[in-house]
Image 1 (cartoon, one colour):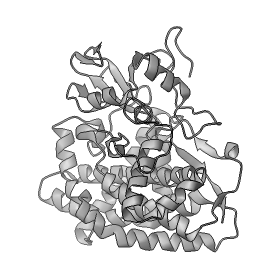
Image 2 (cartoon, rainbow, N blue to C red):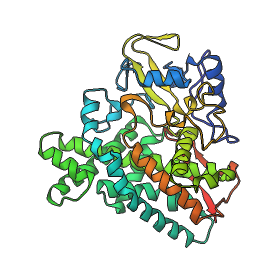
Image 3 (cartoon, one colour):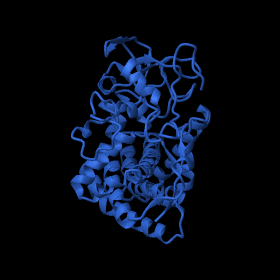
Image 4 (cartoon, rainbow, N blue to C red):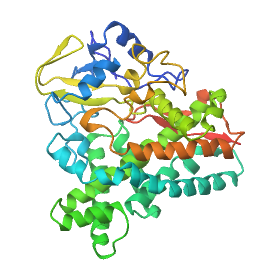
Length: 401
């Protein structure tokens, strides 16, 4: 993407030499112009970029900003991006957002997620056993980081895991920014059609799962069967794509900071704080959270006018030295780490964060307990990081143990 003559282009590309850090341009902007316009779509749109933690939280928590991508100034991930179905409620404002989210709130309460912990631990053990039976080097993503959250979300939803090649392929099309808006919309529609069939199946063969309970809400007239299908599709997509990337990137990060690994093995309190710091440090939604001002509002001394788009790169805000001391250091005992923005902030804060936390808290200690000699099998410069995607990660990670 090229920049306009006067504005820096918004880029997702991280330098190969520092793939775990945000592009250095954004640290410079945060210091010199913390709220500034950037070029999107080769200059055809010039949204605001908000790079400080305080300003980012102000935008994300304010009702003066909309998540609806149909606003003319909306800085969508793809030019011409159509509006997703209501079940993909992150792109809706209240009251639709609140109504759709409410149907799932109970599913992600901490108590319910804690009931899943034994299953997560069992699946972790099974996949690590399978990995150790391979003659390395083996791809950590293919054999562990991707199948584990996929198995967990399938168990939660009641989706047959044998269909995972199909839904993983659709998920790739949704987050890959080299894919056209039409292809991304088609992938969402494909997931919706697949889940619609499952919703109807669950009416006659119910289980103890989310899709069954959504089907029951259809029968009560709370939501439509299309809503139930797309809510399930949204969870299926989001529930494995993001966590898979966090597992792989967290593993890389700890292998690059081997002195931090004993902290991961130190018990529940220590692993909980370590997971929060990894979430802050990595903040994998590096495409930024996208909003549009629906009224004039002043943020950080700058007036943003109604109709103007805003990009909030949380991976940059979470490295703000004005809020996090020595933010480029991986400090697994950081005092204020729970105030990171990795899951967003405000009414759109990630609904599935209790599940993501539980998975990481269980998985990471077990990886390093079972594989104390785990190593990346290629030089770091040869690791295939995902660049042109809304969610950062690695395509593959050869490891030995």
